[in-house]
Amino acid sequence: MIPESSAKLRVMRKGGQELAKVIQAVARLAKPGASLLDLDRQAELLIKKTEGTPAFKGYRGYPFATCLSVNTEIVHGTPRAYHLKQGDLIGIDIGLLYRGFYLDSALTVPIGKVSSEDKKLLRVTYEALWEGIRLVRPGVRLGDIQAAIQHRIEEQGLTIVRDLCGHGIGKNLQEEPQIPNFGKAGTGPILKEGQTFALEPMVSFRSAHTTVKADGWTVVTLGGDKAAHFEHTVAVTKTGALVLTKRSGEKEPVSKLRESVFSR
Image 1: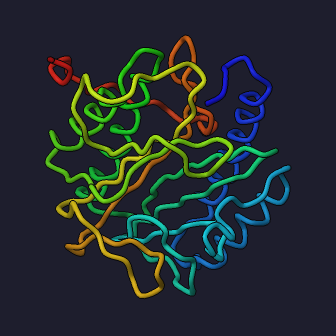
Image 2 (image 1 turned 90 degrees about the horizontal axis):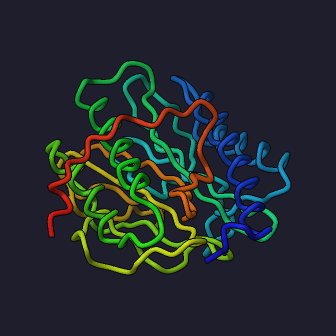
């Protein structure tokens, strides 16, 4: 938890801007024929040009700078000698340790032309992230944010991956509180100015639950359907959410939230 006016938050804001540039550059390289290993190498080279280091590399023994998750893989996908194909979805998740503080961000991008169903999966997951972000301010309960994310996903007939969640972040990559992408409005801890956390809806067509591949890292949908993942590191300020990892030119989607979500 970091006061908004502190030098520490200014460091996190700068680190978030650096991470946003890295993840945006890697997303532009994700085209048909690109290999996951090459994307990981490029990400690490870009990170080394900042004043930071790859947050994931070495974390609990993880050997890569990125998590690259394709199609049915939700998170923690390990870079490997796989070349992206037309119609793939790739989740690009990158963390940065910057001057003693952690930032975390992810987005899922289509490779070439994808189906209308896949486009909907990406769109709704991204909208759900921003439905949660819009509610961030002091005095709001965490359950309000979780309920908003859940409502947007489920009203569109999609499924929340319930085995995974967002989290606090700051001096450590993973901190309390844990933030599931479902919950009840009016419940949970009250947000305070200076808190920093990662919101990250993870959504599939049908699978609420997961399993882990033989590599011991890659989390996939239990039902074998595609998934999407979007994430931003956010700070609570007096005026609302400060999205620390917002990318240049990133457009906030129009709100789809209905007030009925918060009926007590």
